[in-house]
Image (cartoon, rainbow, N blue to C red; front, side, top):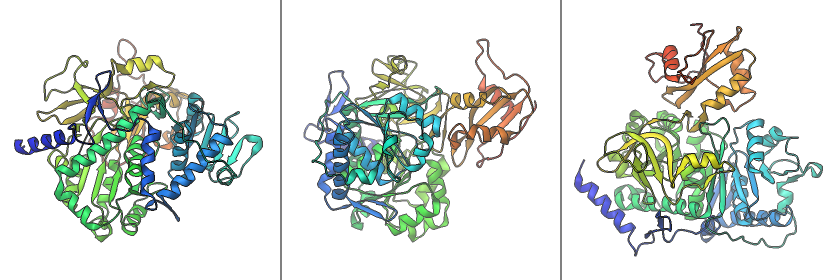
Length: 573
């Protein structure tokens, strides 16, 4: 690697972080690095979007909204939350629907009213959705008709705003449009202290139930400013890649196809684009042909997606045609990217502003990142640690390993979560003196680039979605004929990983029957696509813990990454 190029990048970073720069770096009372000029609250951060006025902001189906129109709707809903639903600062409001403008309007209204938005996984079924609503203690749920059907009759006194259905006063259900049509006084923009909770995002870890990750206003302001820094750094270090974007004269426009209930959709796309005057074209759900149509018709300049989406897009013959001639930026995230995929990106669009990063819900997506020339030179890495972030590789943060040595990854930053909602013991386990144990294995090279090599946590990342192996095992255990099971990941060239399971059964059962049973109790993407059945006890160690690697090897010895497998297999070994 050219040492001179590395030094140039370091000099650019130093210039951006100098005292005279908007990105001046300082330190907080705990010794964490901070952007001195970052918004002090999420409420302040989102108000930056108002300055973009009548510029186009959202397109969804036939609906088009400018920034001014978007904020007008958000302000009206804020007033309705305050005056009609009597929402007070600190109350939790759950948002449960697929990507659409109402999701975003509802989120901004919650923040402006001083409430804490709680975005829920819209793929969840009744038990998963209801658990999060109850766990967060949400006083209001903003949802679409599909999610309302899942939750019907189970919400008790929780008020509901349904975006595409009728009101039902007896059930505490308000119709979205009826609220917007009420004669209300102007909304009162809430204020918040930097260390107050601002957001709860549920994440699937090693536990059977998702945990609510609580982030403060300060952490979110720092996270969003960190994303602004990365964009500025990429522009400084990759001027030749920025030039075509600038010369096109197009408004930066991204195709939104990742869920808004993830940090990648919420932070890196929605909130960042709102603040910076970029346009968003919303997909209701991922559809390859529709994605290509929208990219061409709406002249999208940016596409961010998980590896499976990027793989499908790049493999389509139209991707190399004029249909994507305005696509100047590509972002990969939500899972590891294969070398063939990275090579394909750079072969088809050699001057693209491509990028990737590393982060998690607990870190508000802030960890390491790179784009442009850095990505081209280090395509298999996750990038440099962002300026706010300290990364240590080692058994503990105070015992760092030398460069090139793989080990557990620890992160610390001012964008870190405050903790897990109502889970002090798990918070204490995850945060050690402000350091987050990531659950990943990796190393730092001699240039400071981060490489992810393995994962400690018992989770499966299928197409960007985290799946708790324990949750799947507990679901299988509810079947009368399942004695025990072991759930693990299998490699997949499109999805990154798929869910596989070995189940010990007490009576003959068809794999398809077991899949159908599990699909009635959990979201479809969590259901194992490959199932092996056995009558023999599963291997355990002396303490009784399942030896998943041995179990996996016994049923899948020597396997290599293969195309998606949607059929189950049976073995009676």
